[in-house]
Length: 368
Image (cartoon, rainbow, N blue to C red; front, side, top):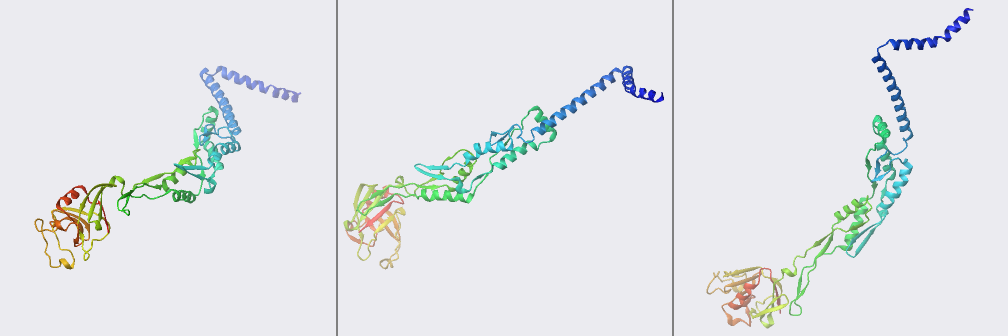
């Protein structure tokens, strides 16, 4: 009888507990009851939501985070293997195509294998993957739950041999470089024949190599060789008058380019003091010069003569160097003969006409 009583009390213990709880809540303050129930509800919802987000994070743990891109190509939601295949096809393969560099009609092809180019797809994929995974766990859970992307782009990662790029550009320079050529004058035929000037070309090797390196991570495979134009020292625009002196004819010819402007009778050096042949330039022009005795036996006892009457140079002097010059002379009877001490003599009028037209730098050709 006692054992049966104990068994019955055990069975009704549960209902009594719920009954007591019900009676407690019924007699409790209603605000407390609402607060208690709300807290319980929020606790249940929080636990459920956290569990859902953890499950969601676990399910997507092996995939790229939403919003991640590699070289601007979206890889969000992909596995690393899928991303590796996608990036190889859409990033690495186009980058590995040959580059073509042009300069006018010249074309140079750069096989990127020759410079040991390697696109590091694995490193890009791993970097992209961890850009999403390395967030604070709370932030990561909420981003996945709200489908909020991270907006991260991983740039192209590659390696190459810089020395081989420089060697390739140096080879282009070897093919293309040529120096400028100044205008030249040929008087071998007795009259001036002008050979045109030519601009030179120089490959800017540093800038060209930098252009190649900048284009390497992109799909741009057509480049222009960076060059500079080299100006000649003397161009046609620099040419003015040309003087040709033919000693055998005792004549000075003044040309404007290849066109004869005028000609004048001259006196040239005697057999004892001959006028040298060759190409000279007017180094200095001087009006009313002072005559200084040259370092020569015939002038060792001579004195300096100021401008004016008695000056053997007359009022016009055009120096050619080493004491040689073209000048006016008061002794016009000597014109047409080889009687000077090496200089070229002109009448005062002829010297004035030439003096007013030529400049310092005017070429002078003295021929036999």
